[in-house]
Image (cartoon, rainbow, N blue to C red):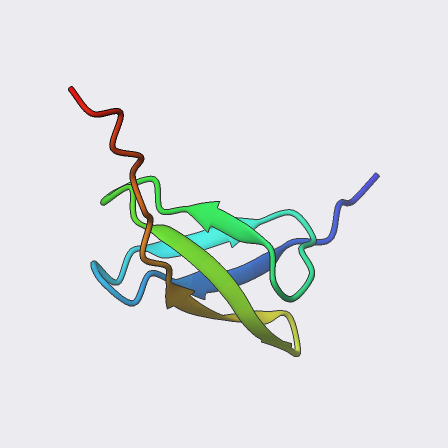
Length: 61
């Protein structure tokens, strides 16, 4: 049984990514640079990814 996959590349480190099916708005992490990426668009099995700025909580320490 074949599983459909999508491809794309990290906009930061240009690592080629292969993922299971995703939808627009989902986030993934680049396995190389660990940047959080959001799926902006999907065209013909190719992901358009955008880096997401992650806000860390300030626990007042």
